[in-house]
Length: 156
Length: 139
Image (cartoon, rainbow over all chains, first blue to last red; front, side, top):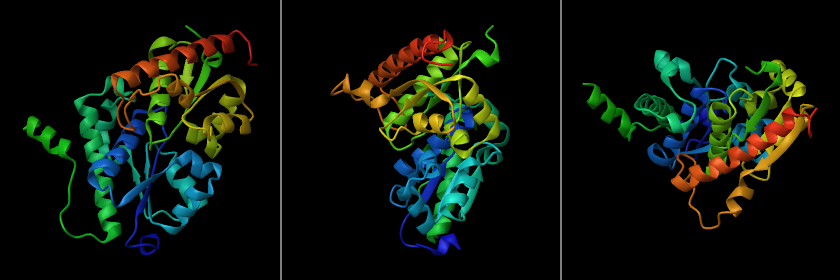
C-alpha cells in the first residue's frame, strides 16, 4: 500500500490543474496553504502536466512516496494521471465533494477573491492536512487553517 | 457575439510551486474574462495532456496561445504534441527579465508589481489572439 512506502519521509500532493474552473484555483490554493503553512515539512507538490508528460523526477517520486490527489471535477485528471504513471494513490480528494454547494460561489481568478474563496481554501486545505497526518501516522493535534476559525467566528 | 468555434484558445501553465505559474494563469484569466472575453477561451492543460478527446478536438481546430511559466514549456509542447497550432508561445520568464529586481509575489499571491506584469503578459496575449483570429500565424 502506498502509505507504507515511506512513512517517515514526505507525501506528494498532486493538484488539479483545472485552469477552466474555479475549483481548480481552490485546489491549487489549498495545496499552497498546506505547503506554506499547515504541513511545510511533510509534503511537496508535484506538477501534474510534468507528471503526465513523462518527467521522470515527478514520476519516480510518485512511485516511491504516498500521494494525495486533489481533483476539481469528475474527470479526475490528477488521480487517473497519477495512477497511470506513478502507481496507486494513497488518497483521492475531489473538491466539489468536500465543499458541496460552497464550490459554486468560488472564483477562478484571485482578482475576484472573496471570503467565500478563503473559506473554501481553508476547508480543503484542512482536509488535505488531515490526510497527510493519517499517512504520516501523526496522532497529536496539529495546526489547522487559521482562516477557517476566523471566518467561522465572523459567521457566528 | 463571437462564435464559439472562432475563439482563440489560451492555455496557461499549471505550475503551483512558483509565481510563474500564477502569473501565467492570472494573465490568461485577465484575457478571457476582461480584455478579450468574446474572442478567447481558456483550456485546462491537464485535460490536453491527458488526451481528453473533446479537448484534443478543440485544440486541433483553433489557434492556440501558450503561456508557459518555465523553459519546460509544457503548454506549448503539449499543444504541438496534440496536433494543434501554436499561434504564439509566451514565457513568463521573459517578462520577468524586463523587470529585474521586481518582486511579483509568490505562488499564492501577486504583488502590485506582479499584477502589472500580469497585465503586460495579458496584453501580449490579446495582440497574439487578434493575429491568430485574422489568420496570421495560425490556421
